[in-house]
Image (tube, rainbow, N blue to C red; front, side):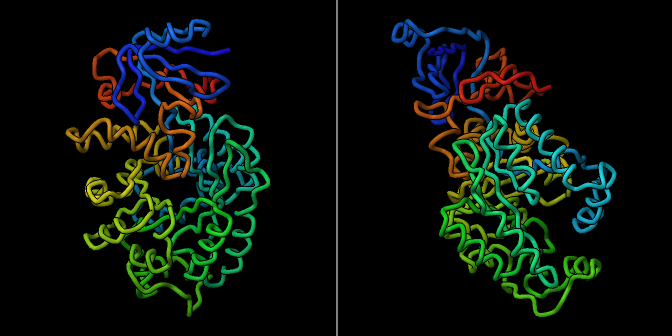
Length: 411
């Protein structure tokens, strides 16, 4: 049965907002988008649902999160990034001494929050992928599940074990794609990055990594010193002779070949003018996580300059261990508050169309376009500038649809 959704506003994201618009949906796919009266006449047999004073936007796309950590909370700002890493274990133990149980609870809570806040597609980083993937495969979300591999120095064998499982595609399907994520330059050596990139290329898998997340990364890469080395020593796993690219993080990523692939780079909080040029000549996308960025007290992010340099910059939530929740729109609201004059349409594309492009899923989601999944979010509005209105209030979605089906209340 064809569905015809009518609303005061339709925001396709790949075109201007449509006043008094409509969307025709058939079998979970968008068939047509346009003027409401015209589509009523064109499809008289469709079942119409008039949503009234509302705006329909595409299902939101969170390009970087860790769903398995969704049972955690940030707490007070840590003294340092390394102390925050050390605190994660204690916070997890306060929930359960069984890491598998934490992952189960976390991914279920993460899915619930995503749907509540209108997120229908995620790029999920998971080290417990053997737990999260079966649950995600049964969820309503579209997911790129990046299996995370971590381990260097005396833990180097752990990286190989995780990488082998990370790329298993037995659960892959139309709504679950398998990717791989070598964690970060302070937990993966140069050989590990090359292994992951080689596998991604050979199997045509999405690739993601954390990069330039902290100011200490450069010291560790270039001199094998600083807080990250001390962290490895404190855990008893350091050994000399670790193969690292002795360059700043973004230059190191170029040397490793990561920028010659559509890699998703999480954070990039530290980026020089030279780094901007390097990124502009590559294929990678950058995920800015505003509330996590604020939580750690990093200097202002250079997302505007990145966009000016034609770098695909998108917005993500990161995890509940460093952000209050998975409300992606709240992250975008923070970006808007930091620069109220920046184009509202372009901001919204950073959690829809651009994010879908970063996840290599723009052919199926990210905009209200004929042929794409019928993933959409309904917000009630009161003004003639609905996208700006939603950035300047704290409203949550009124309804969420995934693949043509309304989602049950997730609150």
